[in-house]
Structures are given as C-alpha cells and as structure tokens.
Amino acid sequence: MSIITTITRMWLTKSFRPFRFTNEYDSKFSYDDCKNLGLYVHIPFCRSICSFCPYCKEIYDKDNCNKYIDHLIKEIKMVGENQKEKRKVTSLYFGGGSPALAVDRLDDIIETIKKYFIITEGIGIELHPYDITIPILQRLNDAGITKISIGIQSLNEKFLGILGRNNFDMKNIEEALSAVAFETVSMDFIFALPNQTIDDLKADIDTAFKIGANHIAIYPFIDFTFTNSTIKPMNKKEKRKLLDDITIYCKNKGYVRNSIWTFAKNGNEKYSSMTRDNFLGFGCSATTLLKEQFKINTFSVNEYCKRIDENKLATSLTIKFTLRQRILYYLFWTAYSTKVREDDFEKFFGVPLKKVYGFELWAAKIFGFITENHGIYAMTLKGAFYYHYYENFYTLSYIDKMWETMRKEAFPKELSF
Image (cartoon, rainbow, N blue to C red; front, side):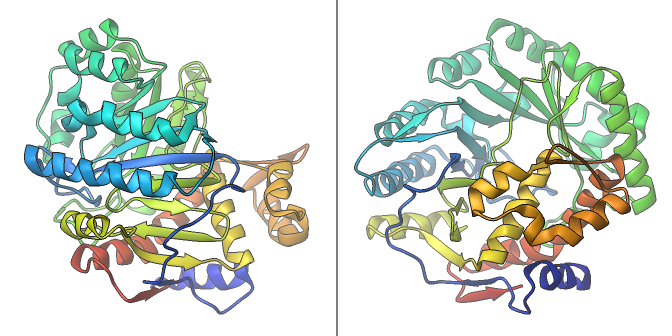
C-alpha cells in the first residue's frame, strides 16, 4: 500500500478507518434517489488478449458469449424489477472486452434495458479497430448506438509492436466512418510509452481527426502488477512534459478539453462511462455506485452465471461508505472532468464544499493546482498532471490489488485499503 494514498485517505476522510470491502451485499437495492444515474454493461470477450490490458476478459467463444448474455439479461431484469416505474438515466455504455463480438445480441440487451430505463443522452460502445467495418457499424447504428470509442492505442508501428497489437487498415476505417454517422466518434491512445515523443502523439492526434474522429482520449500507460506486460513505464519528469505538451497542442488546435485525458473537436462531443454521480453496472466485473455504497461483480464468468442461475446478484465485494468516504469518491471522479462545481457538490451532499474542504481548496490555489471562478474550481496544467500522478498511485494501490485478488478469487471475503 502506498504511503501517499494512505496519508491522503486519512487526511481527507479525517479518519484512520480504511476503505473496507466485504462480501456482504444487498439482495435488492433502490436507486430512486440517485440523480445523474448512468448504466454500464460489460461484455468480457476478446479475439485475443493484450498483455498490457488489466480488464476482465476472456477469449471469445460464440456459445459461451450467448450463454453469458442470457444471464446478463436476467441480471438486468432482477435489478430493473426493483422499481415500480421506468427510471430516467443519462446514458448506457457497453465496455469490455470487445462488445461488438456480441453485435447479434445487442438488440436483446438494449430492448431489455429499455423496459426499465429511459436513456436520455445516448448509448456508447467500445470497439476494436477490427470492428470498424460498414456492416458492423450499420448494425450498431440500427441498434440505437450513438457514440463509439475505438481502441486504437497507437498508429505508429513501433508502439503497436511494443503493445503486442497488429497494424490495421486506416483507409478501411476512414471509409467505414464516413459511411455510417455517429454523434461521437472517439479514438483512444496510450501515452508515456518507452521513448515516445510529442511528435509521435501529434501525428496520432492529427490522423485521428483526419480519418473521422471528433473526440480523442489519451490515457497514460499504467504498469499493473498482474498483467504480462514487459513495458517499462516512463519517468515522472518525462511524463509530465508529455502530458503538458499534449494539452497545449490540443488547445492550440482549438480542441476542447472535457476531461483529464479527453479532447473534443467542437466541444459538444463526449464519451465517458465513468463521470456519473451514480451508476448501475451489469455483467461480470461491472461496478455499481449509489449514494451510500459501491459494489463490484465477480470477475469470473462461470461464477457470475452460477449466481444469476440462483436468482442472486453476482456481487463479489461491497463498501458501505461513510459520508467522508463518499465525498472523497465524488470529488476524485468529478475532478476527472478537470472541474468541480460548488453548486453541484452542495446539491448532492447538502453541505457547502468550502465547509468540508476549505483549507484544502485554499492550499490547492496557493500551490497553483486549481483556479476558482464563480464557484467553479478548474485544474491548471500543473493540477492536471498531479491529478494524473496521484491517480496512478491510487490505481496501483487500490485497483491493482483489488483486481488481482478478484482475478484469483471469485468471491473474496474482505479487502481493506
């Protein structure tokens, strides 16, 4: 456990009490009072497994995939039937894995969800570059998908080789994207790879917008301990300069930064399955965040299906938040957008932000991490880097440990951080 994250947790929660996850969970839960509620569905199947990828996934098999989706639909019904009326939700995102491998079943999943939820801001899906064909994109479009995110990672053969990815035909991708229109076409890239330069990333960014993207996400490489990756992480000084250079380049090109890692061509395009005040997650490894609890489903596809067969939720671990813990969680992920609004915080918690963290906000301004304008706290370049720097510690101290454990144990008894 990193001393940095431990001290930060104790300071900001004003408690020595750790984040404690247990195998106890609510068999039913209400989300009636949850505002800004989103939905997430996890499809864990892939054509092949990338060595650097930490997410819950397994090799695609059509029969296993169909069996899994039958159970996924049953889980959605179990949760949806808790409410008497349809509930408005902001969005629905499909992640994985490669969800397009289940393109023939997406209609079934979406139709089930629409029995219980009204989606107000569209449906997004993560795609592998091999999925970008006119027939697949048309199927997605017909199913009601409005946002796509393509996991490019790099357009440079050298870095694709480092990542263990094969090259792909950019001309075919460009033709497919021009043939089938989506509200948001996002492309994901990884930065901070060995010997990567700003010129390498500029070339990727320019090409992405040229071939049809209107939104990009540039995520840092994170060296999870449980993956098979042999990539050596970039040092702090180089990483900071690269992140600053990316941000400055995108801003000079007129792109709008709408999160730590993302930039939109015109400012209106968005793709984020994380930045929601509350969300419901369906499928193995999916997480659910409510006002007073956070839960994560088992990482085992087989055990997930067994639980659903027993008419039980597939929850593996749950934390019941203290108020301070929930506030910290809210601020951490809200800050991902680079802005925190006092009014939104007070509406959510019923207490002024300055009353809770007045000193910390003052100190953050003094050290040049944030600026304040009419109740909106915005990160500076320096603040964005240190958010990233802390997020890296958080990921390796909390998420790395949790995911490694859950990959080995379907239902751990307890985890504390």
